[in-house]
Length: 307
Image (cartoon, rainbow, N blue to C red):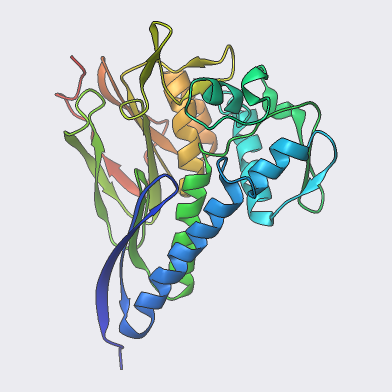
């Protein structure tokens, strides 16, 4: 006899955004499963926050140049994936850009952070050692804000599935993972964020979106935002939205920064991770993909170009 099932939707402020979980499952486990998923996301926030002085990230930024620091396996795994994507992308994704984000006011001031230089291939100066230890070859400041939110979404999805929940959507401000039932996906128009653009259906996969519409500010006569090119420390081109679909939200999250910086040149990088992207800018909306994915059905039509 099948257990009665229900649907549940809950939201909490986490990871600098509003996180919403929608799930359908057996009555006796559904509420506990969603609570456990949120608890897992809270753990990721505690471990990987740049703002929390007790996080693994803060500990590394303070001490890893002086000695090897052992960190939580979750944080180490995220750093390992960040290093892999940095290597494949030629450094387009690099978690050592924190000093520039501090200088521009996107991250809180940390001891000496704003005085550090953002270096090309800064990720190569971070050594990932055995037993979840990390050491910096020279002073550096890490920020996992470009990948940790996606990882938190993945962890929440895993917890739901461990509780037997297969029908779910975990949405952390644009970083989103969908379970067994297909979900219609919309992205914000980069010039008019209030306008949502339908881009297709998603099932058993993840999508993440990066754009400058909420972080853009003017400093010293020029506009900056939170997507930074490690080479030269410049922001990505303005007024564009980039979404990436991948099996894991952590991977999709990081690859949006690669696609925002490299545009069409990112296709080969996306292919290495079996991912595809959607770019919306002045030239219109177009697919960044070398092949079609079975987990998505995207269509980017006319009428999406920026003015």
